[in-house]
Length: 158
Image (cartoon, rainbow, N blue to C red; front, side, top):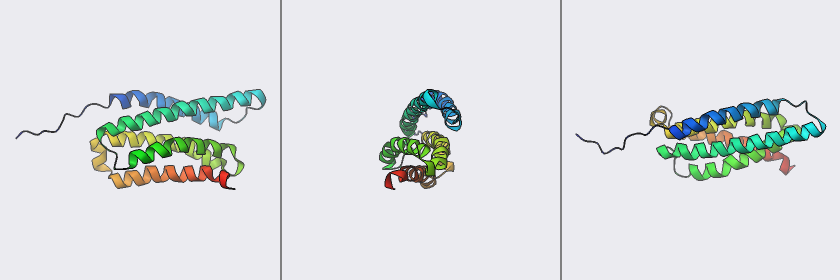
């Protein structure tokens, strides 16, 4: 009996993007948690955080697109990801700079990149999709991302 399913390709793009994303995430974690810089050095430190965040979120977006090549995204999740991922970066950066939401911003900066990368791997690998149902994966990742984004944007509504 012959099957017409295409052979599964290795997720080479995801493998190549995961390493620099992990390095950028580590650099971001160290930079955000190290707040001893003041004056001109503090401005340069802030610029470094912005630059690392930009490249990390860019890599995460590319990883999510590459992860979808396995056909793992449910209907509408691609549009949600395209909206939430960039807005979450801005919201979390705003939250780290606001006194009342600093802990939420720091937590989101450390957690969301891991969740986005894990979701890209989940979407790309059929074996993971069989273990974790789509509804549960979507609820965990995108629910958490939306909550952190809304909490991060809360200083705008005060």
